[in-house]
Image 1 (cartoon, rainbow, N blue to C red):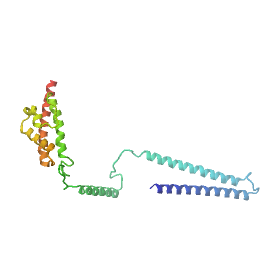
Image 2 (cartoon, rainbow, N blue to C red; image 1 turned 60 degrees about the vertical axis):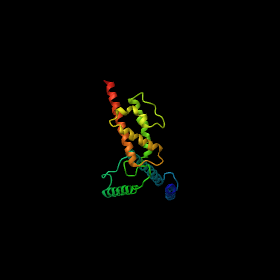
Image 3 (cartoon, one colour; image 1 turned 90 degrees about the horizontal axis):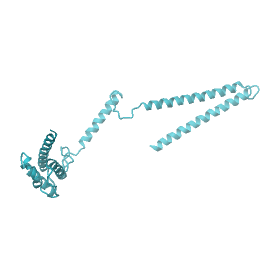
Image 4 (cartoon, rainbow, N blue to C red; image 1 turned 90 degrees about the vertical axis):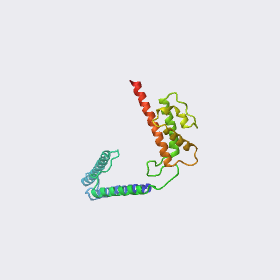
Length: 234
């Protein structure tokens, strides 16, 4: 692309120089002819030479004027173009062009959708095309522990400090009275133990069970936190 642009610039410069040389040669030729054909064969009192010279000067300044006018017009038109992103609407292009763009865009979307992996499966990861796509089950379950611990400390400031390998059923024992169903904590504890210690990756079903238990505990702690805030404000 750069070589083509350089070649185009050199060609334009060459043609410009040739045009200037041709104009100068024609001017010199006409002036010399005007001198030779004059009665005195000199520059003094030579009306023809004066007319020829004035004509070339007028052409030169007229050319400069049109070049400057064209350049200013192009610059002003370019400045009116919006620098922000603007989608092409149907009224911006001919109907055939708009239909072609729409058809190609729909085709590209269809190809992109069809090329997405849908049957791929990797142990411990959500399947493509599902709500768990791109989710690593083990990491997602373990990440809930720190979040749950932070909420528990908000609700119960004297809540014990989280230890690296503490069982959830033991660590969260003080929030058991707050839970509607105490089995939820046992389910959550089992899911965390599986994510921590199992050699195999958790399945999607195991992840869903553990995640739902974590959501129920989180919701309970959030409700308690909101009640505490309401009480403190009254």
